Length: 458
Image (cartoon, rainbow, N blue to C red; front, side):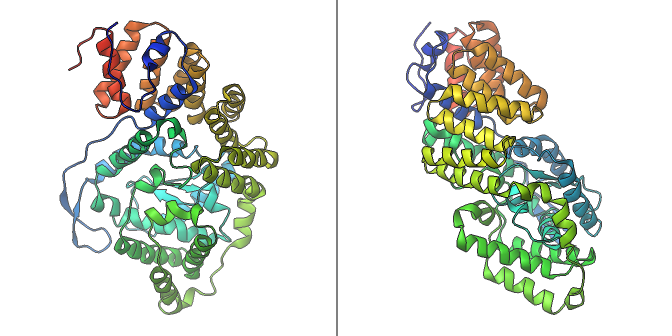
């Protein structure tokens, strides 16, 4: 086998250790991080369209069909990065019911809207350009009534209806996610599984860095949808007040939302003025607090666990792993069967070199929520670190059954087969991976492995 040149941040002699089936803890961490940044999308061409909201000509980077395609292809992967929809059908049905009530008041009623509450602990809501929407459990437990939830969903619906994502970035908006993940992974590969947890600037923050102009328009449209659906306009002002006060008290927990949705006192003042004047007649409309409380009771019961998970993620971002472990342990005392808490504890323990204990939590997470993909990927990297590439490959197969199309999993499969000594199949997987991605550490590692196996890389 010829010597190969690895990326500068690749652990030294990684390839040799994989061949001997003796990867180190840092190797497993690097592999997981490299897989996170795998794969990009090319940006589309710009063109003109008519705004569904204003009727004016606007410059867009994708067609409506491309908007729908991006949702279908990319939204499932982002929702999985946010640990999937909560395992509570009542909560998801309820959020969907409120969303569908609002979407009937929008300009683009034929878009394939969908709504889910995600297991993510940070505070945010976001939507893909075709209307696939996620609301984190972190923000849902902070809301006080249904009018605030309707304001949140209305704001996101407005971004879809005004085609803000299409105007601003086109197809490049999803490619940006991969670029951010890759850049973070190359900064400190040993810590790459923890990227984004401290600042909460994950991929969802990059889906749409809306301008202030777009945010003002989304507020106004969302407030209009809100009132048309029978809620008081104050629902939007209450939402703004909640976010501003939360940001002042706990700034780290709102960095994602404030990055992707720039907040200002001017935005809040505009919503207040519209509620006082144009929508004054909606003041007596029901806020539906009781219905909101009843429908979200299961999440509010574990609110201390969600808060502890938030604190643990912030501590992980600071590399304060002992503190993070304590927070996740606290979360598990409140909610012993919480998927997100077990997964985060597994990541935290893996980073501390406690692979066996990490594996116990990750396997529990897999048993709790086998339909969610992230625990399967984390289990695979732990198996690789524990020198069991066969079990790693089996976990990755399970990941593909749940969530096909992740280039990072294809890369990890190649590594697993490499560790099993199945050169031909490993080479096939490395080559397939390079057909998808030619940039980043995983791509360079794949190319070097193929060269070392005697294959010509074009």
